[in-house]
Image (cartoon, rainbow, N blue to C red; front, side):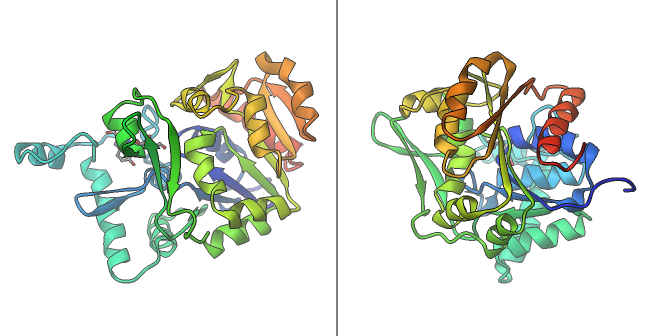
Length: 318
Ligand code: FO1
């Protein structure tokens, strides 16, 4: 696109918050300038097929198919397969749509023929003519699990979808993260970025699994790029999802300051809500520059305006 700047931007993304920001960024920059490292801690196997919700939402977003009401799955979806499965008394609590299943089948075929997860996703993106780079944080299995009061470990999807985030959580584990290696693609995306953006994603369930991979955290610490995070909290409330509840249950401060503390080893700039401006001084005392603005991403105008704030701070637009 003419007149749009040429830089290299790497984002770390979960499933809903960062994709909303990306809708704004896409209005300002070419997709081919963007590399997105996606969380795979939410991944799960259903009917033998790997489902990778955060990566899949990015694939749907960049191929202009994302359901923008739910921010997961494909628009104009149907559920015939699920209905048939229900008739056979198979579990149907996780709503796999017919169109969505096609992605899981395609990925399964590639994985079965020896592709790494990164390569399978790359191949699917190429076929869908996606010019942004979508990279999983690891090719190895890492599973975010929630420990309930009976000391049972629930998968992230069981916690979120089956139990609607309604059960108390004693601990969150990123199972497999001790052994998993970050992908070389993810590390080089961090190393080669001019700007790194942590979108307004849940620090425990979206960013947490990525930071649990020591190579990713160390690459962020060593990076010479400006690292900018957008808070997912406004006045102590999350725009979506269980961030506040989980932060409190796990004894973190459920505020933008609490999140700044979690990211302080590598963060240069934090964008927080104007409603939270009183937290600014304490965040600055952590060595992090603070920008106060409207961080709501409900409307297209808000998505573009917040993207402008971030890209201006990065020196990418003026
Ligand atoms: N979220 C739901 O609340 N209910 C569902 O049935 C559901 C199905 C689903 C299928 C595929 C997919 O990629 C995502 C899906 N999600 C569903 C969203 C998902 O649970 C979470 O929103 C993400 O993991 C969080 O990023």
